[in-house]
Length: 227
Ligand code: DX5
Ligand code: ZN
Image (cartoon, rainbow, N blue to C red):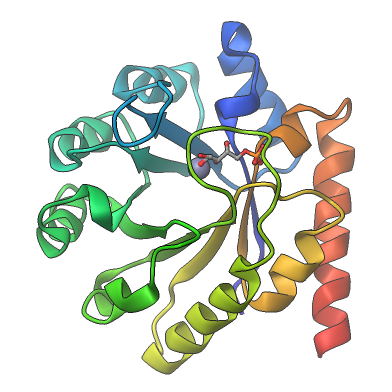
């Protein structure tokens, strides 16, 4: 399995000091920056757009930026985020009229495409898309807000995605997002995720590095147990 990546969600950062907050999690060991885009239409909340992504790049952020689009329609924003320096761009299939076209658009724009599954969204959407994806993102909360309770029913779903990715023979990241903390991240790793989003658990802690270290230790112990 690929090396585990920790992806702090900047949704829980102090937005008045965003550049410094991103620098701080990178210095604390974050592998990528999870960037939650909400439109008050697909989800009942409103956050940040391409200008903020571009500002982080101009500020000097070098790690991959993992853009999670919770917007409808999707396509209009893809080129803007590509220009703004996004690395991954993930979207919810229900929010796109033409899923295959959106995946192709993300790729054409030089970014890595990901598909996102809400807790109740079936994995059927992977049937004709998996070979075109670089990332599958499983929501372990309903999208819209940080700080929600982890939905454990996603664990068998992660395991099913791991089986499908293994069968595909392709290198595809499996990311889990929502309610992940130091005390449940091992279960998420054991189920087969290799990329872990955490917003409130990291930004709400007093020592980002200690929290990320504890997360890595829990992931390592989960893998040691299953080896
Ligand atoms: C929820 C977002 C998440 C959120 C995670 O819609 O996609 O990325 O910021 O926050 P926590 O880790 O606090 O659940
Ligand atoms: Zn997210």
